[in-house]
Image (cartoon, rainbow, N blue to C red; front, top):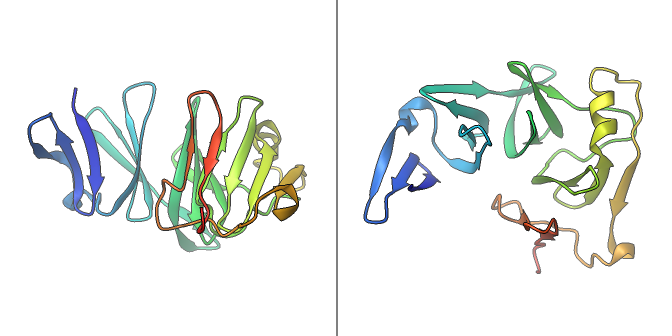
Length: 193
């Protein structure tokens, strides 16, 4: 095996001795400024690069863009669950990949804010959405039911200083401002720790 690293000019493999550029993952393929790499259970690779979502499976590289009201929005983060890809955007909230397009998720009662920095799922089926200056929890099953039904409402829990969060200004410089541990614990970094 080798280590796969995404950078400003594409994908690189590290074999334990040296780095080599991935022939299918360079800036000429659109893969510049790689922000996130997520391996899928089937051996394929999901990536966020230059604000777009990419999927590499076998020798194919597919690209998806987040549009709302004819505007293009940058993808900031992704969460890959069983058969689905959720994408947090800079400017238009949460998207869900359906077929060959990203669909904006906008049910009643759910407004994660324009900039989503991370999405994680806990063991009880809740999505935790880190939306730059707030942390929200919503049942994934309710969001899935609401996709395609804009009249459907979802219940959202918003966490703030009353819940022990002294600083809600989450860093958006790096996609690693949050992580989920193997035991299921969620870790979030704010601008002051």
